[in-house]
Image (cartoon, rainbow, N blue to C red; front, side, top):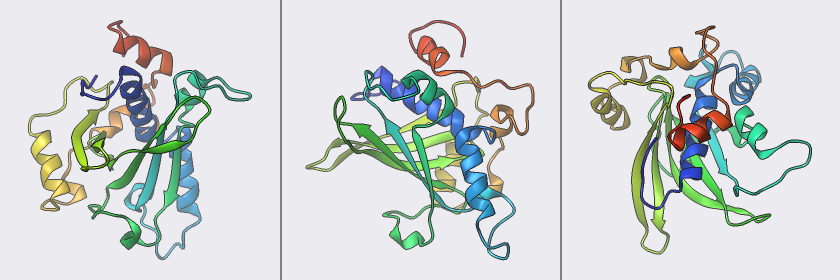
Length: 211
């Protein structure tokens, strides 16, 4: 669990459960990526759907927000808080996204039954099973706080992963040079893997075993 000033434990749990769903091709968001990939022209589409640039909107709802027909906890477990869009024109993205990376926008709900505002932007690097985000600390400055969210199920990231991440973001190494950690937490690859639920992620954040 990351510990970052200005980010609540609830928000941290949202980032963790979102990352869990992003890494799992059998999840709702994984299937959404596949469906978007199938709509692309075969001549233009890479074999790996995750090599196509997407914008991933991660929504952090108010902890007491209620929805019709589904509980907040069930929706978060399924990854319904993640919206996926194919990026047709990379020039519309406000930063340079390394080839194979995915652009992420984190949206936080302003209050109960209220709208959402941008809380952070960054990247999802699938092989490393992590999010690299810049959280907005002060909109007027603007001041940012950089964080890396690692997959909560992967206990030990290999030595040198930080350097690999830095070089990838600097575009000094390609996507294919990254270690492939995501296979362990992807049901399409690891059939023995069972992704944790929101309740398990939330309990783990409070110090209980399970994730």
